[in-house]
Image 1 (tube, rainbow, N blue to C red):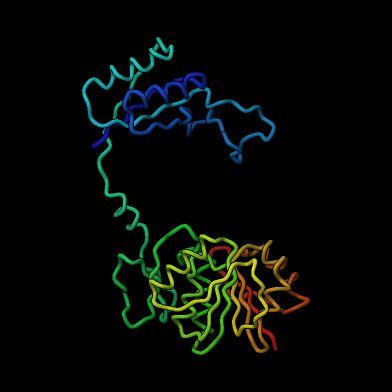
Image 2 (cartoon, helix red, strand yellow):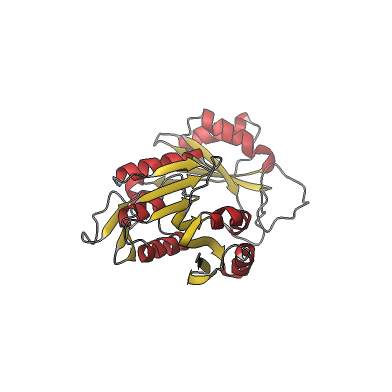
Length: 299
């Protein structure tokens, strides 16, 4: 068990009180808007409701300093002395609440359940038992790189791969992130899979996830040349980069091959379709929660 100490103060004293509480033995200290959740809440740090040209204040005019302590005697006295040391003589009420111990690893894990993509494919965190042992189960834990299967765009691309990969295809996953799409393609039966990303950490994550799933991937940084042609090209990025990459990605699709793009909101679909029009005809193949998957093929 821990004890959470909450004290109201002003912007002038919030930082110095935080330092004084740390010196008094606090494990951690945070500062919040004391008026949060009311009409008087003050946006900070470029929050959407803040005025762009509004003067910057150090902290909220009415701040709440929250400190976490191990259970101890005379905590109120320690907090009072800390406040007096920085010149706060009229100390407001000190609120103390108990914070129960939690298994944070177990709590985090409980937020991620196996994801049913199609009857062929499940995404399963490593701490779960596969719900369908007859299906292809891709083992993937949440990490630094994007792609766990829960986001609608990742789901749409995974769904497309289960429809397109039947064995012996070559696949390019451009913007591979965690490697989830590339790994899925390999487990579904693709003969050769290349994952490309701009982020070194993503490539490391993709490599580790491929090892965990016992599949072989070729991984390449986006700065490297890409002159190959593939039966299937999939890119789950965002609208603007997809538009910029139109000549490259369309050029990577082999004759008779197919292209799938996601990371595109429904109102942005026409923008991407227009960007690819000189190279390949795209159409909306599927939608999910306001996102679309664009598809096309090369004759």
